[in-house]
Image (cartoon, rainbow, N blue to C red; front, side, top):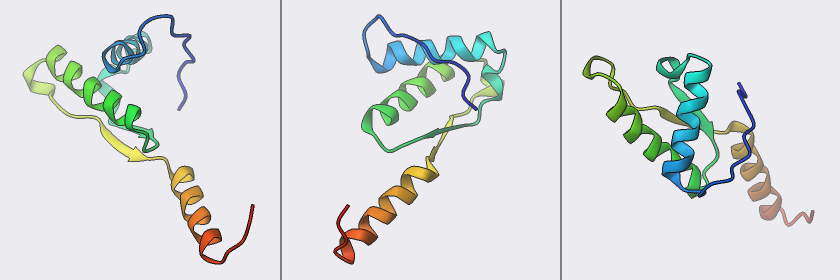
Length: 93
């Protein structure tokens, strides 16, 4: 579920982005209900998720410590599969 688009006027770092994500989740009052991020395999997304998990663990009580799980974006995986298939059968774009 897409919650919000946000224009970022600050440093585009994993820590800054993590704070933005946490603030959005808090605004919707669902911070403790998110279990999975559906993201592609780009390194900045993985870095963001790792930073987010560190901030989340630091900011919630010991009773509710958990990591958000990364679920690969299915459409991206299908795209990679089709691209590899097309290359295998030598089909051009």
